[in-house]
Length: 358
Image (tube, rainbow, N blue to C red; front, side, top):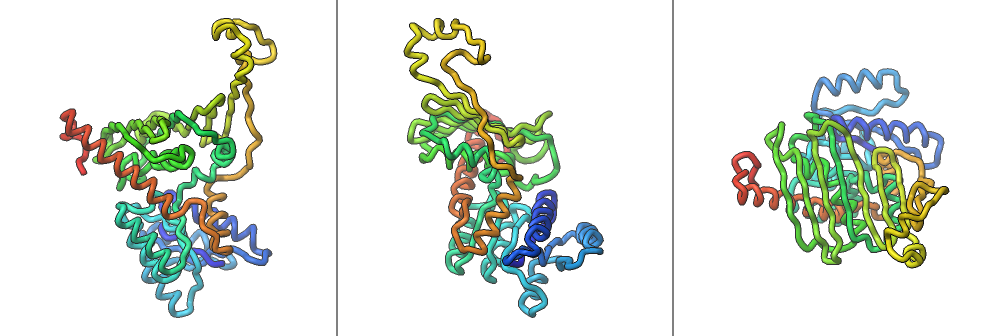
């Protein structure tokens, strides 16, 4: 199977690295992965790439445009079956639509497109041409999330924090589409209920777009979720916690760590009241009696590599992707609605002079 990476910026480089790792790992297998093409319009990056592959036995061909790559493919100079699309969000639709129309399977980085209309057109093109369209929500492949999905039991409260130091990367979109969209996708999958209402606030700090945002969602099931996302933080935080009947679940995405605290109803029922329970000594655990902490053994693996391995498997088997184009569209729809609510709040509070309007 032959793959391409389109766009080798900050995150595209990671896709490139993983494909090279898979190329080495599968070289002697029945279905080897080959990175055959890279598209990078920036000449300085392209020059660096050519230098880095100078001693490679089978280096990928490097093109300055999608059109140039497709011409080489059409004239038999290049074999490409599928691609990772890692260009800026504003270019997702143009690049992805062109590749789908030529019969390529795609892994499109999040958000899947800049607008819902574009997302719908990509989904329709994938269906028309019988192509795989996977949305690049890599946290779905985080070992902690994979384990948390197995214990999901009607969660009723979520709290998500995703904070980053400022970087000039991805400033073509706001913090909701850049960072929060990861957590929106995860919570939509775990909550399993349509959103009923929301409240959202956001501010631009160092860029023309919203750099910090806080959102509260209420679902039709009664579940509530709070989200905070910032790309102007002094620390890097990637955490999610949720509560469900008799259980608290804490996830650290960065550490790929899952912590579970189970509540034993019998222990609470045996105590006259909560204060009496908490007063009971427990030498075996720092937690109060009736609470049991455990950390499951998680699958080892880098989320991005697991994501790309899953994509490769879908290309080979034609099975639907774990994160479909429809799932990417759902996360995008929620993110865009949140941005509308942020703009609405700004107008109501007199902040529209500094908050971008839609």
